[in-house]
Amino acid sequence: MRLIKDDVSIVLAGEAGQGIQSIESILTKILKKDGLCLFSTSEFMSRIRGGVNSTEIRVSSSRVAAYIDRIDILVALHPESLIHLQKRISKETLILGEKEKISAENLIDVPLSRIALDLGNIIYSNSVAVGMIAGFFNADLAILGYFISQNFKNKSEEIQNKNVQAGRKGYELGRNLAVNRVRIDITRNKDVSKEMVLNGSEAVALGALAGGCDYTCAYPMSPSTGVLTAMAEYSKSFDVIVEQVEDEVGVVNMALGAWYAGARALVTTSGGGFDLMAEGLSLCGMIESPLVIHLSQRPGPATGLPTRTEQGDLNLALYAGHGDFTRLIYAPGTLEEAFYLTQKAFEISDKYQAPVFVLTDQFFVDSYYSVPKFDFDSIQIKKAFVKTGKDYKRYALIQDSLSPRGIPGFGEGLVGVDSDEHDEEGHITEDLELRVRMVDKRLSKYQLLEKEIIPPKFEGNPDFNTLVISWGSTYYTIKEALDNVSKKNLAFLHFSQIFPLPKNLSETLKKAKKLIVIEGNSSGQFAQLLKLHTGREADQKILKYNGMPFSVEEIEKELEG
Image 1 (cartoon, rainbow, N blue to C red):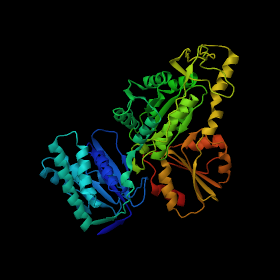
Image 2: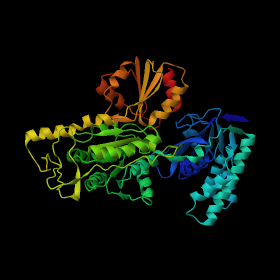
Image 3: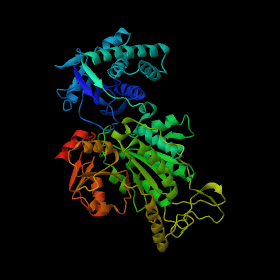
Image 4: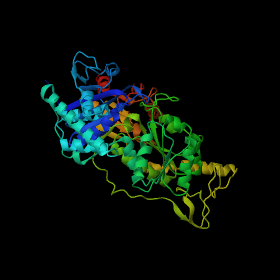
């Protein structure tokens, strides 16, 4: 018998349409409610049927939120699963599958289909698999039954009951394996059972609600669509309008129209969709409108790898739109940051009348883990528009301050905006001296924003000589790798605000004898920004751009080397 203690990686692999994500969705709820610390992430091919997709469910005695290459238990639901995952399979990996489908020397036969057919239909196989994995951990049977039933609550009572029976049969199978083949020793955490389990898309959507978002529009594009569907679900309980628009050009302009009318609008898109919004972003800069854009990255250019992950759109967010105007970019590294930074994005965008990006990626938005409940009570929504008077001027030139933003119908003033250069009232002008004053006014927001900058998170030895820098979704993976490496002279600086950067950053970087930047793109886009901002060039770049996230093991290997 094999003993797996404190940390286990279970990977389910099957073709698109076999229900891998349904198994993940049910299991994460069951294991969390049972007090188990978990992390789950998926990788999938861009197809509706066929291919091989996989989901990693990592369960640990301590909190985990990082992807690892190691597979302790592989549940293979498709013959090609072993080929697809061969680089991650070791001699220690326990391979579970049906002997009729899977060929492997050390295969443990698990008759998922046969159990399902005994209950009347092959479609119950997924519930058998859910029950089997729950059985490994000796999860509470009542919790198992509840969440399987909830998953099928829109089906008939017979289908609900059959799936619950399938789950219980699978549970017996899992308990038998736990007794005879593999013992998993994981310590439970009673606090986890009271927490939320959610993914990055849901965290961003909840942050938007907390930020007062009352209008969301998008054209569906993976991996950003999860935020759109989450907001559509929340609109059943909250006063939010959610609209699927005909294209991305319409999306950005409808969002600007909503802000002009006094709403707080969210746009959610991915790189190829945002390309079409560049002109609208430039319009946003000229009319000094708030705008919150969730940009979820995937590998490009063009269609690229539409269901994979990459941190390749930083330059796009930095430089999109013609002309110079103020913008701010957040890139959350944790679900808590996704919530609080998205909420903050609405406050900052409204207050400073400028676009704010929330930059995520496929790995981030599709990964699940448990987090303590967010503090909604401490959040106050402060809308920044004013009631206008008869002498109101939308673009009033006020020394060291922002022009007051009015909205139509709230007061006696006329709220004039124009995509051309304009005077203080919003009328078109070709006064070249006034043009300079208006450009300077728009760019002066960067000085006002200095007090709002979120400093990077520092961890490690204050007397470091090697400094590791990262941004966005890589946070937990690098943090775990750093905890494991033997070198003690390392420190870690993680950025969740990408732009503008702190003014005193140069002083921190000067302390580093060696500067290592880790990011998921081919050119080191953040390393380029650091050099531009501080003059310091990275001594080493650890880059990944094959569509997969960084794993803990590969970061460890690079840092040890």
